Structures are given as C-alpha cells and as structure tokens.
Length: 523
Image (cartoon, rainbow, N blue to C red):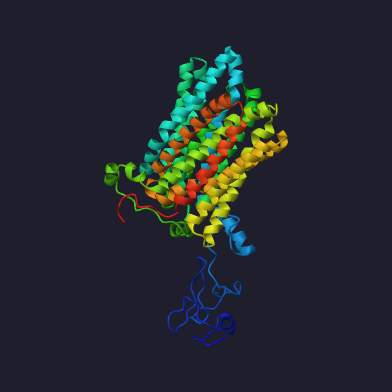
C-alpha cells in the first residue's frame, strides 16, 4: 500500500498527461461525482481503502477531440461524412421542429382533402336528393363560387390575425372551423341549398388562414437555412391532401355511405386540433420538451423581429400603402397570382381538355388524379432541400429565390407548350405531370420569400398576395371558358398561359429580393 498522500500507481497511470478541465491551479483533484454517481473516497485519504468489489471506481477523464456536430440542415443537406450525416438526420427526425412541420403538413392535407371531397360527392348527392343534372351543375358551380368568395375575404384578415396572435392559435381556430363546416355539409345539404352553400362559405373563410399560419410557424420555428425544406414538407401535405381526397372518398362512400368522407375528415380535423393544442407551442422558447441544443441552434440560425408589447400591437395597423409602394411586394403578388392561375386552370380544365382533344375521361383514371400531385409533393420537398443547400454553401438568398422561382415558372411554361404539341394522351399526360411537378419549385421561391422581406408583416403580406392569387384563379378558370368559346380551341389558351409564365418570371427576376425590406421607414 502506498503511503498516505501518494497516488496509487494504477490511479497515476490512468490520469491524463495534461490536466483535465476540472483541475484548478497546480493541485490535481479527482472528481467525487462522475456521471451523477458518487465515488468512494480516494485511497490516499485516511481510512479511504477501496472495497474489493470496486476495483476501478471511476473512468479516467477524457478530453473530447471536438464538440458534438450541431444540426446543420435537413436530411440530404449535411456537409459532413457518413457518421455525421447520420447524426444530423437522427437529430432532425427526433427534433421538436420536425414535429411542427409534420403537423403543418397534416393540417394542409386536411385543408385540401376537405375541398375536393365535394367534387367526388356531387354525383351520389344528386342521386340521393333527386337533383337533375342541370340543377347539379348549378350546385357544383355555386359550390365552387361560394368557397372562393369565402376564401377571397379571409386571407388578409387572417394574415393580420396571424401577425398579432401567432400562427398556433389562428391555425387551431381555422382547422376547427373548416372541420365543422365539412362535418355539417351533408346535414346542411339535406335541408336547403342555401344552408349547404353557407357551409361552403365557412369552409373557404376558415381555410384562408391556413397558409399565413403555416408561414408564421415556419418563421418562428426554423432557422433561415431550413425554411425552404420546412415549407416543402408542409406543402407536400397540401398536395397529397388532394390525392387523399380524390382516391379515398369513393372508397369511404362505398362502405360508409355518402356522409362517410365528411364525417371522417371532419373528425380527423377535430383530433388534429387536440394534438396541435397539447403538443405544439407557438415558439421554440415556449416548448417544454425542446433541448437546449436545438433551441440554441434555432435561435442562432434566425433573425427574429423584435416583439412588440401588447399595447403597441393593439395600436399597430399594417402599413398597407407602404407595403404596396415597394417593388418586392408586387413581385410577390405577381408570382402568387401566376401560381394560382396555372394551378386552378390545370385543376379545373385539364380533365375537359383531355376529354375534348384525346377523348379520354381522366376523372375516371385514378392514376391521373394521383400522379401529378404526388409528383408536385415530392419535387416540392426536393426543391426545398436544394434551396437550403444553396444558401448553406454561400449562394445569396436573393439569387436562390430567383433560381427556384424561375424553375417554378419556366418549367411549367415549357411543359404546357410540350403538352400542346403532344400527339398522344400518354405523352400529353407526361408533359402535364412535369408541369405540375415543376410548379412546386415556386414554394421555395415566392412562398418562402414572404418571411424574408417582411417578417413582421408576413401574415398580412401573405394574405394580400393570396387574395390576388384567388382573383387570378377566378379569372383564369372563367376566362378559359370564354376563350375556348370564342377561339374554339384549348391550345391557344395554353399558349397564353405559357406566355404569362414567362412574363411573370421576368418580372420576378427583376424586382424580387431575399433581403429584408424597410416598410416602417426606420432605416
């Protein structure tokens, strides 16, 4: 046994050559607590002989060669090697922010599914209530109009509410209201047409807050280098909701009756609200489950607007005139309008186009109903990952947004010209799928850009541009009918849409910016 005050040879051999971090000054002390476990007294203390059952009561302290790699990006965007990439992927999948993105994607999937279920249900409803084909056509037209008029009013108001109350609260109320409208639609249709149309107005008004709320939550929860991917995940849910509604509604109706899809989708919406309220917080700092590492990563990676006090916010009115006085605002409005024009023209008129030109009823082809929107969901996420990777590698945000939006407009413009020149329905369907898929690159263009040029007014700015998009959707769908009646052909309207895509690309590339714009006149 070594004399008192002298280290055992074994313990001395286990000590590092350089002083570990817990050593203070020249005196070296072994810690009494390692990994939260109390150690027995060292042998050099009086009566500190180690018991035989503990040959080595401590692990020698080790200095880490480098700190654990921080989460740098979404899956697919990690600059590290295989081990680091797996660590980044595991961190992201289990993070609190990915739960927020997943819940946003589910909400938008319900949003779109609740829209399209009536398109599937109109035929069995007509048979159940004895509606004539002409009256069913009036109901279908009125249904679309009532939804769009409700959707036209709410985005600006909803966007202002999002900027004031935050995306969590407004999204919860929105999903609850549109789920209630969906749940009550069959009951209302059985009683009167006007009561039924009022549920469609409520559906449109409630769904108008969905995208501004989504943008607000992404702004609060994701660093600048992950926002495109987060929007890609959320919008993938939106596109898949279209497919879910079109494909599942007939199956549910065959087993649960006409009211089945309305009841099931409505109940899922109520369930989503319960999970959203209990599991998701409005900001990372309010989340009790988030790790210190993730909170620090999010905070360091974003530039948040200074929060105003309640009194200031009550007196604050969005500066609409100043918002409309800047060219980047008009670049966003133009991009949103063109995106909605192309989206609703394709959604509304392409089945008629294929039936007229190629004599193919694509509403009965499940693969056509699903494939373009699945492609849009997949490419939207890919575009988000590529966009974030460009920013991480040093490409300016402005140039990144212009690249993504150019692909999102020029791609569909060229694809529609290819659709016009196609000689068979298979080739035409391929061009249409390409057009719809490449449109999703715009989600990493104008849709993310709202957060960047005006984070404090992102909600109301989104509402303004979304209202312009709704006007464009109405003009495009109605104008296509008048154009075809006058010109006698769909091909001319497709050429017009392509030219509008190219013009909007030029306008965006000239006036868009990825930098914050001073709308308050403070700098």
